[in-house]
Length: 235
Image (tube, rainbow, N blue to C red):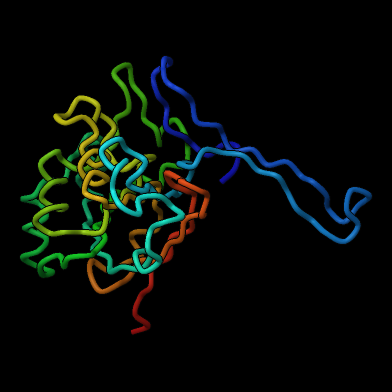
């Protein structure tokens, strides 16, 4: 994260996330001769980050739903990576459907309960913040899950969560869906998780790898910037 890290843009009537800011406290100098450290400030959902169920109104009453109460074993899970980079490159509003997933399963096998489903779009390769957010007059245009896919994954596949390369887990135009922002609404309402602004998904096999991540344990935290690690075979 740095001062240029893109953050979610909301309409003016809503509260705003802070941009990332780093302030040096001391660096082996008169302010602290033997130590270097910084203050930093940012929103919980900045850069590569984790979404806890409490982040959304539908998940506010779920058990152990915040960053400091989620069972630690939930920070390790198998990963299923669905590559739609070609489709997303041709259409920034591309939506992954249950039919796409079933076609993927016909090749790689059924998504096991408790897995992460990660949508590879190569969107993270857009280094320019404007291109990454891809804002137009009607809002952001970023690929994501189709409204029908989210309940399919949450209820029929019982995944642990959904991950994407965009600034958030939902598609850019998800405010127009029914329900609005289905990934947030349905995933978190099912006490499941989100990972956003992921990178390097092209380095992970479609199946057989694991994902490890840990969120900062701020009290009743709705999410946290985090470093997401893929655990891959050495073969």
